[in-house]
Length: 301
Image (cartoon, rainbow, N blue to C red; front, side, top):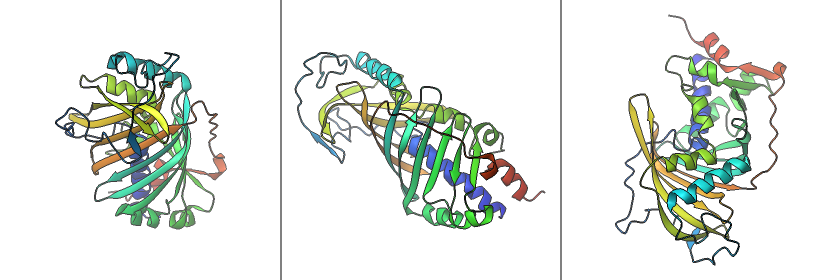
C-alpha cells in the first residue's frame, strides 16, 4: 500500500466519525442562523410537524411536553440527567458537508463507561466517496472502544491488507502523529454522546424553547441554542436544535455550522434508550495497527 492510500485510510474514517458522531466538537459557524421572530431557522425541519400536544398528566417530565412554563436551564438539566442515566441508544445520522460529501450512519452507542458502540457508516454522494471507494472503506463497519476504534475495510485496501483484516485506530497513537487527524480525537468521542450534547447547550446563554412538535409520531419540545467550543486558538460556533420527549430523552438533534472540511448540516435521531450494547475488539490476529502501518508506508526524508 502506498503512503497516499494509507493517509487516506485514516483521514476519511476520522472525518466520518467526527461528523457523524462528533456533536459540536467538529463544527463552527456564525451561530446566527435565527429568524427575526426569535425562532430557530430550523423550526420546521424535514421530518417534523409543528403541533400542540396534551400536557403530561403525570407531571413527571421536567421539559413537560408542551412544558412552556419550565425555565430552559431547569428543563435541560433534567434532560441531561435522564440521558446520563439511560446510558445507551440506537442512533441514525445523516451529514452533509457542502461540496464534499453526504454521509449516513446507523448503529448503537453507549456512554456510561466511556464511548463505545457499533456503527455502519456509508458515503452517499460528493467528492469523498470516490476516495472512499478507492481505499475500500465504503460502507465502513466500525467498532468503538474506550481506547480507539476499529474499521473493517473492503475493496482495494482489503486486497492490500488481506480479507477480513481490521484496522485499529488508537486515540493515543493518533494524537501523537504530527498534524494527524487524531489530535484531540479521544476527547471528541467522549463529548459526542447525547448527554454531552445537551451539556454543551447548557454552557451557553442563548438557549430557548421553540415550541411543541411531533417527530416521527412522538410529541416533543423543541429547543435551540448555540454551541461554542475551542480547538487551539480557534473558536468554533454552531447552531443546535434538539427535540425532547416526555421522558426527558433526546429524540432528534440538528446542527448547522462550518467544519474544517466545509459547511456542515447534521441530523441525528435517537431511540431505544437503554438498549444493551456489546462491543468487542476484533481478534488480534485479524488486526493491523493503523499508526504502525502509516509509519511503515511513509517515505523517510
